[in-house]
Amino acid sequence: MRIVIPSHKRSHLLTTWKNLPQELKQKTLIAVYEDEMEDYLEKTYNLLIVPEEHRGIANKREFILENCRRENEDKVMIVDDDLVFAVRRTDEPTKFLPATGQDIWDMYTAGERMLEEFVHGGVSPREGANRDTNDLRFNTRIMRVHFFRPFSVERLGVKLNRIPFMSDFDTTLQLLRAGAENFCLNNWVHNQAGSNTEGGCSTTRSLEKLGQAAERLHELHPEFVTVVEKTTKGSWGGGTRKDVRIQWKKALGVRP
Image (tube, rainbow, N blue to C red):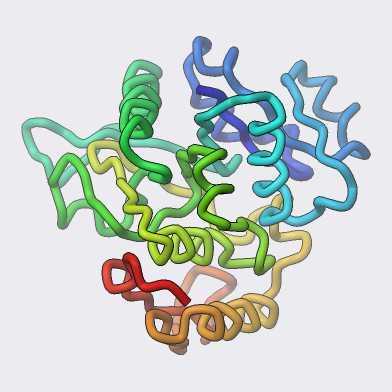
């Protein structure tokens, strides 16, 4: 199974890449725009060049699946470029340890194995994972780490780039509504270096655009998405912004 890491203006960071064991780095492509190619090649990454017309993270993910189909690759893991991973402790399952290279390899192989049965899956975010210690979760939020069967996604008529932001949520809801159950690996968790850090989506994303995306997500899935006001102290400099509350399990099999 191929790993693809979409990246933009972060050739000097690529936290996710740095955390991969060497065996997985050999399976990994960094998806970048042509005008960034030289900067990333200087760091000796293996690249997937994304055409200019596919700018934006949602368009880039859609291009990655298209490329997988062209290359006849039936499984892919698409991972954000700014992630750190942890593994659940066996002695205290509500707590975690920083993931070793072997832990990340085990996570990768578990996801690849689950794709024998599922079209889509992911890895639990760190936040809230202490409250559910099951090995797996099903029909739930998938973000930042995605396992896909590219040909199956196409057969279901699902597109990853219908909205520029919150596209993780739209993709997951489209697949659930098409009847494709998802899995979420829960013995491993991921976390971001921080919201709106240098590079990546921060070059185009704003509170206003996120609010527009929340409203559009509601328009696309009105029965399952509620727009709410969220106040935070740290993310995005604090303050109030529009967010969404989603009923994932309720969406399964309910076509538009």
